[in-house]
Length: 276
Image (cartoon, rainbow, N blue to C red; front, top):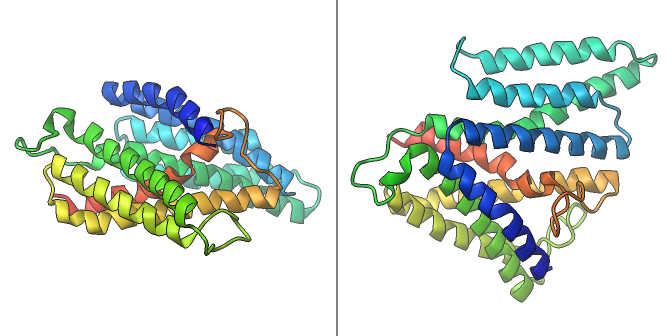
C-alpha cells in the first residue's frame, strides 16, 4: 500500500505543481479535465448500483459549470442559471423513458452526479475569491490564487497522510464500517492534528493569523473525511473497490479528488467570510 501511494505521488505531484505554478487558465483546465473524468466514473458507479443516468449530458453539465467559473462574468449568478438550465434539459431528456419511475431516477441521478463532481469548481472559485496577499506575507511571491489553492492541497494531503499513518499505528476502534471498513477514530484524530498544524503554517505564510489554523484546519479535515466517506458510500452501493483504474494505487480520478469535492467549498467559504 505504501509503495502504491508513493508511485501515485510520483505520477501526480509534478504535473500538479507545474499547473499550480502556471496558475490562471491552466488551473481551470486541469479542474475541467478532472471533473470530466470523475463524471464518467461516477455515472459508471451509479449504473452499477442500479441507477440509470444520462451520462453524456451529466458530464457536459459538470464541465460547463467549471468553464463558466473560468470565463469572465457575463451575468451575475450565471453559475446558478447554468445549473437551472441543466436541470431542465436533463428533465426533458428523461421524459423519453417509458416508465416514469425510470425517468425520475434518470433525472435525479444525472443531476446529482453532475453537481456532485462539479463541486471541484470551488478550486477555481477559491483562487478568484482570495484577496491579495499582504506584501509582508512570507509566501506573497505565490500570489493569492496559488497561495490559497496550495493551502487547500496541502491541508487535504496532510489530513490524509496523518490519518493513514496514525490509523495504521493506533487505530483499533472503527466508525461507519458499513460505508468504509478502514476508518478509525485514531486516524481521524491524527489527521485533524496534522491538518491543523499544516494549515496554521500556511496561514502564517499567507499573512493570516496562524492561530486560526485551529479553526480552518479541523474544518478542512472534517470536510475531507466527509468527502471520502461520500465517495465510499457510492462505491459500496455499486459493489466497487475503486472508482476506476486510472491511477496506480488509488484507482480512478474520483478516488483522488473525493476529499477536495467537500474541502474546496469549505475553504472558499472561509475566505469569503473571514479573510480580509
